[in-house]
Amino acid sequence: MSNVLVLIGMLVLVVMAVMPLLDLNEMWMHWAFAAGAFIVLVGRFIGIYDGPSLRIKRLHHILIFSAILYCVSAWMIFFSPGTNNWLGFLLAGVVVQLYASWMIDRESNKSEK
Image (cartoon, rainbow, N blue to C red; front, side, top):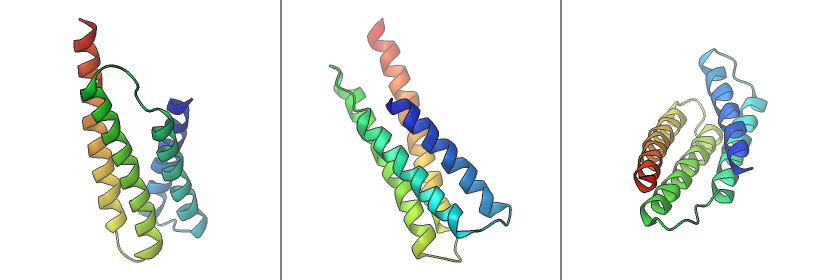
């Protein structure tokens, strides 16, 4: 369930992030971006890791931090109009998520062996 929420939220984020770059900048797109960021945050909180590995648990907390960066990006869209600062927070969240996801997979494979 949490993975589905995160997937839906990420798809909304990607689509709404591309729209302003194509010069389509409507207010409903900003609200949809914010909704996508919130959906990702909810999905991350629902999918908390309860296993024995402390390192994987910490990496899941880093995934929650990436979702918070997406929410800050949505906040920047509303309260910093005319700038592209929101893109910086969005990209920072993506980098953090890529790192944490890669490390979770690596640690999971290590613990299986």
